Length: 480
Ligand code: P53
Image (cartoon, rainbow, N blue to C red; front, side, top):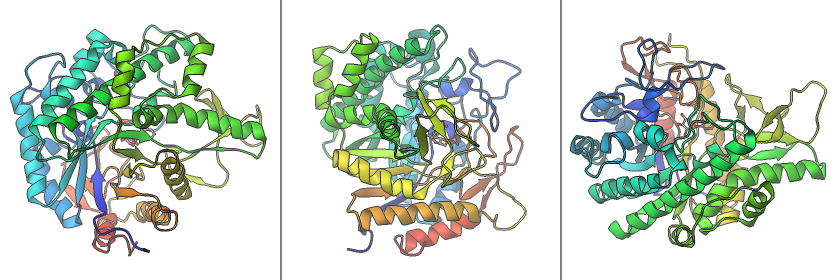
């Protein structure tokens, strides 16, 4: 075989809060995404206590996909997408998060959306929670600090999996569940487990909280897998990881150990999702640091029972770690308790993300070797400033980025034998950036006329990458 399999899942990916808008319509409750202000390139977003008058909240309208999806799905069909990855906005279904009864209007919206996709030959791939926890659960319970939130999530998962059991086959539980491992969160940034660090003063206090919340979230994920399988045994339920391979800066053995450590911090999550138990390196480190993590025997059993069918992951960039304190001509920054520096062998985007297509092939190999499960690249993309003056918009840099990554993915599949289900580039249509809240950090192959301050007609326009990706899909990845 020197070609991709015929049923390779070419698609596009987004998340509900970054596209839908309609933040307070049809019974939807506030979510943690609705209280995030806009930041900028290098300027962090802020989290406010509820929605406050002078602030601009870019997710409130986003790109108004809520009302415009028929037009957008027509474009996705023209592109030839086989799958479309989005999320269900949890607070559309349970406005507060702890109710017994779901909001029927929210369920109806996703019924209509999924029908429209399926009628156009596009299969929905659904994330249950993509940084969209109901705000009330974060505010009143402290998110996944509180074990009661496990049950609220399980009830939500059961509700939507029952409702959409004949419309959705591919599910993922928590988006980038491991992106909270880095301990870089501050007062102004939610973790994906719905936590703000308002009381923890030290790094180790934060770390202990993050590990407990992560364990609770992993239990919630395992519960969702078990519930899903009992609703429809045909479901394919995956985890969703952010994989950022971290290389040792030199061949110094200590650099290699530093890379192993920083990688394990992130692998911790998929190790549990896939193997159903807490890895020894984590148990040991908790003991040494004196963290007491609450995990009962019954919960351990749930982790064992609720292991995933596949691994969905995002891939944008790689990182490099060193044990050196200083290096001529390099700024060394602290990240993940490690010393990170700029890899001299790769280039960077305008937001400083290091572009490394070979790192994708490397990641596919090490993850497949570690777990032996099918992999699904559910995010990969290039955030860039677009120049809108030509028709179609010329975004060759985005084509170059995506083509180089698809090429490396093909090598991993064809030469290395890695099992990859599909590829859904991130932000198939321009969306609100998660990290910065900007519109101008654009990922789309479809342009949306809206700027960082919220001005614009919301009109859609094709970019050159649209025509390019259409051809990639039509040739099943032969012509990139
Ligand atoms: P934005 C950091 C590193 C890698 C992926 O990110 C990340 C982040 C968070 O900023 O998040 C994922 O919009 C996430 C998406 C997000 C996308 O990457 O900051 O799953 O929601 O939009 C791109 O450029």
